[in-house]
Length: 261
Image (cartoon, rainbow, N blue to C red; front, side):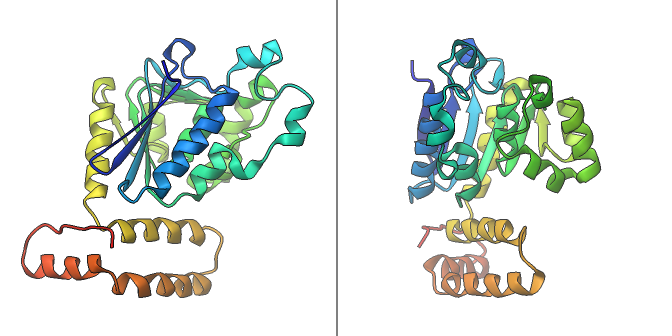
């Protein structure tokens, strides 16, 4: 049984963490595999949206601490620091890709799993799912983006409270804080993720990826710089077949059929 599954259907790439007996904890090998499939989905012209999810009762319980305790996992061994390439780790790759990513939290996410979920663009949570910022309780910091994402998402004070206490947030709390887009019964998570992914995939893919790229760049830019970059993004979109199709479909009062060209 593969620890990571990758399937493409109807312009949607679904990446599934598949170690339910280990609550989908991430092994060292899975880190490399996750980077590979995320990059593959981003480069595949047929893929317009990515859904990241898990099997079993957890989305991802973090890094595999059993491996770490045995001296074979992530964060162990003297060679780790010397060989680590942060340009090719899942959080960095996830942040850099232009395709929209929906995290379908079939269950709880802790530690690394929480950072992984926060790195996605949209989060759909099962009612019973939780986000556990347990890093300081394990003697570490949010090592995969949490200290960058949380202050930007919910403000400095609330992020400080969650990170410094190592607090666990219920799905209802995540929804209230804006960390979850939607909370649904556990059996409906995949269907809701698929529904939203299909809604996104029906739009012009060049425009969607450009919008995500502009939003990401805007996090670090002044307004004046940003509007210049937006204008430069508009020029090739105006020349695209999808722009013409968008205009035609509006005038003809019919759903657009975008091709990504």
